[in-house]
Image (cartoon, rainbow, N blue to C red; front, side, top):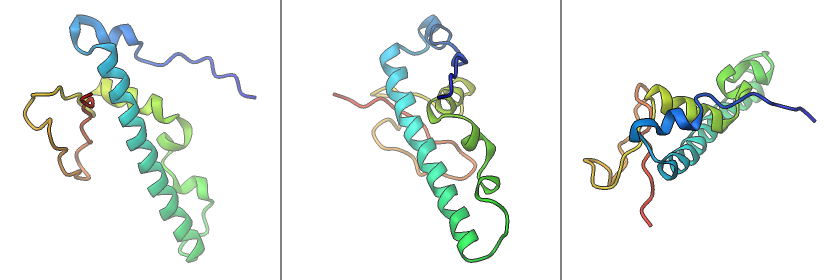
Length: 116
């Protein structure tokens, strides 16, 4: 079993400092972001498997998958994207919080907490 003692960066206190996000918003956004990352990985893997099956390439499967998805866990990627501003947490009542925008290849999806 692999022992992965690396700390998640940035730490939670850094993401919640100065009231930027509260822990609840952060947890919901990271979970949604991790689902998005997992979907991206699955799509990339399906495309790679299709290319191999159709004999479009002779490269190994792992070399056809982006190293970010291959080497990091979805939660770490989601936290990093929130910290870098690639994902934004939208609060209820903010403009556009009711409906998610269409994803464009050059734009990252925006994350919003669900309302109870």
